[in-house]
Length: 307
Image 1 (tube, rainbow, N blue to C red):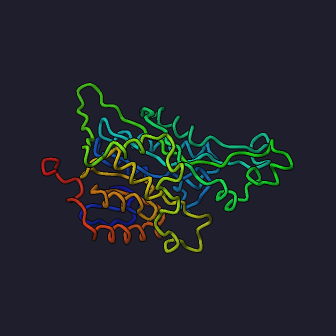
Image 2 (image 1 turned 90 degrees about the horizontal axis):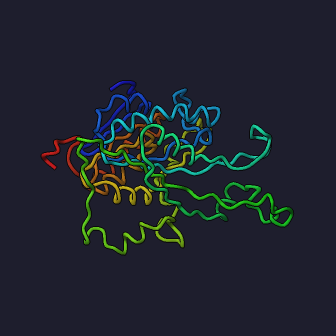
């Protein structure tokens, strides 16, 4: 495997300290059943000092120029008929920071959708994940969320920012076999499906707190310029239950401290992940090894006949 700085594995997981783009380009075609991850939010968060870090891009245009390569390779390695799900949100640009010197929102989620469609994916679903605007105001002190802004001039007031889970399908071509993901009445009761089928998750306050994440403090170094934004475990779990089967191979090109891998093994899936930041990689290896002690399925890429 090219450009791998370090690696570790267990019976049901493999983790690589590597740039995700050349790594994904080296994976076999049609080898991944499902991918789920939170991509870098353009230049909002910086995860490492590496020039290969997509979070080090100067602007959105530069980010999407780089992200496109991953989306293209992800399409190639995904099995026909299977899905990818990305956890994103729109981004704020503050006064005098836009090209026109104005303020507002950057439709980051729409641009992610556009890139996927342009690289062959079909847009399958957009799930809005409700987040508390009071919590957002307390964390960011955003001018548009302050009550005093509403009282002074409400034309500057805006709504809180939700998150999104964007889902895309790789349709099978003529002659290609698509392996379905099936459920039973017992494993996926209709009441649970009605909950999942809602276009808005976590409203009114279902079972998806945004604090349901792995601890990132132990992995951070003093050189981290901005904080890590881990993938919520509960969102990952729902996505895996919906769009993958037990024994499937799940891929995260931005695994961070291993959140997607931990949930994958808890749900009986096998996992491959890449992470560029060495400190996060080392923590992910620990988290994945600890999670495997709870019991997981067989070896990575074991023969389908044995499944």
